View 1 (cartoon, one colour):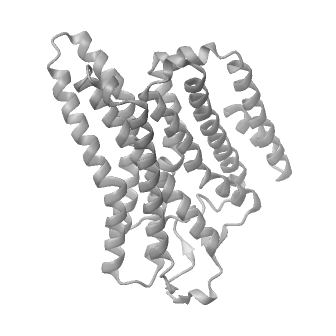
View 2: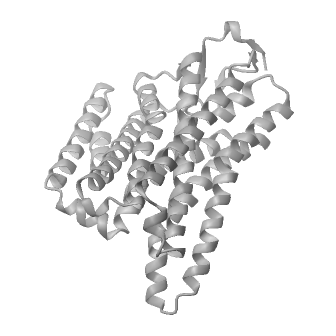
View 3: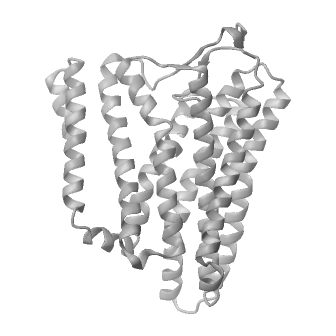
Length: 343
C-alpha cells in the first residue's frame, strides 16, 4: 500500500454495506427507520421517567440517562451514513473523521460506565435492601453520573491526543461505515506494538474494568438470590436484573469483538455487522428490553395521553420520508410497495 503523508490527506473514504445501486433505497429506508425508532423509543423512556413521580428512583434515573446517551451515541454514526447513502458519497474529511471518532468514544464510554453503575445499583438493591435508600441517595446518583461523564471525556481526549500524533497513513480507505478508532489506528504508520498498546488500553477502559465491576456485582447478586427460600422471591429478584443483563451481553459482546478482532485479523464485513450491532441495534432495542419487561415503565407509557398519536404520527412521517426518497431515485413501483409494506 502507498503511504500518504498527513499533509496531503484531507479526507478518508468509508465503505458501505453494498455497492449495488438497486439496494441503496432499501438501505436508506432501513437505516432511517432504525434511527427514528431508536430516537423515538429512547425519548419515550425519558418522558416516562420524567412524567411519573413513582419512577423518580436511582434505577430509573440511570435508565433515563442511558436512553439519552444512546440517542447521542447512535446520532454520531447513523445520520452521517444515511446522508452518504442518499448522496452516493462515502467521503469524510480528516477533521470530520476525528470529530466523529471523538464523540463516538465519549458516548461509547458513557454507555459502558452507566451500565456498570446500573449493575452496582442492582447489587445494592438486592444485597443490601435495608441500606439501599441511604447509600444510593440523590447526591451519590449525581456524583456517579458526573464520574461517568469525566471518565468518558478523559478517554475520548486521550484517544484524540494519540490520533493527532499520526503523521502518515497506509491508505485512505477506512474498512467500516464510520470512523472507527481501531480502523484509523490500523491505517496509521505507527509501530505494531504501539497500536496494540493503544487498542488494549481502550479495551481496558471500555471493556475490562467495567466488565469486572459488572461481574463482581452479579456474582454477589446471584449469591444473594440463591439464599432466598421461595422460588417466587428468586424469580422476582432476578427479573429486576434480566433486562440489564441482556443489554450488557449485547453491548459488550459485539463491542469487545470489534476491538480485539481488529488487532489480530479483521474482516470488513464481519466488523461492520458487529459495529452495527452495538452502535445501532443495541440502542434501538434498549427501550423495548427495558419497557416490555418492566411493568412500571409500561403502565406509565399507557397513561401518556399522546402516546398513541405520537407513535402513529412518527410512523407516518417515516413512511412519507422513505416514499419521497424512493420516488426521487426512480425506484420501481413494485419495489416501493414492497419496502413500504415491510415498514
